Length: 302
Image (cartoon, rainbow, N blue to C red; front, top):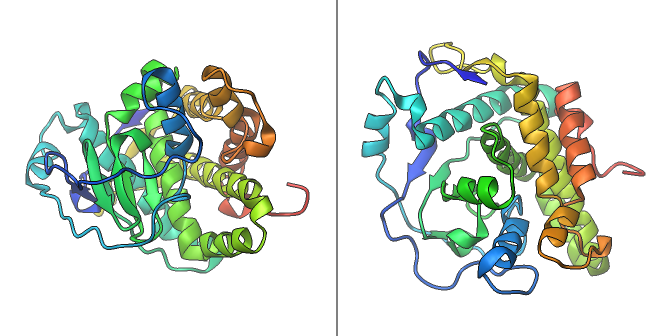
């Protein structure tokens, strides 16, 4: 992966709340039992993190917080901006949203409405409730924003073995896939189905997650065509090795892989995100076609 050092990083697409102390109170509920300590806690957190899309969050409320992007904007305007983790992730957000700004109307006839990514540390208040870093990255449909503590990538690399750089934009692209589902009404439809058919809640959640993986693959296929406001490309190149890193991350966070790492029984009926093979296959489907219309995980027989 080669990023374009001449591209302008648009920090207005993120809200930097790091150092603000976040939101006090209880964190988001974890969908399966267990403590937060050691590898079990990390594994449980990742079940929510990669990538819950807001499922299981508390009732909607206004977070009422606002970050200060001054330091981030200054940092991302320097010559070594792309050496900085937060600036690179801001560029990834720029690319993902640039893609959907064109792809959503072309594929689905709907206008894309941007969503900010919130950088936070330790804890944060969201439209879905109060969260702490233990839940990892997530999308909140109530306020239509993506949330991430960037230290999560150390957990992804060190504890789950997905150390490739391209795992990071895959994480963000998946979360923005959930935003697309909200814009298209998919998220609301699934919520209603889950209420009508609670016995099928997990299966519907899996379909949502796999679709977000597929949407992430479609972005990856088209990422080199995304540009900044001046038309300067954001990515110079994406290699097959990069795509392999995204696929590896998708496999490492499959429900079966997570359960095995935590020494828990592998029970497909309890899956909420999909198996390693499913996550790999749906990301690959999105990447191979480059077409988000191919991401119908709700179709017959899927």
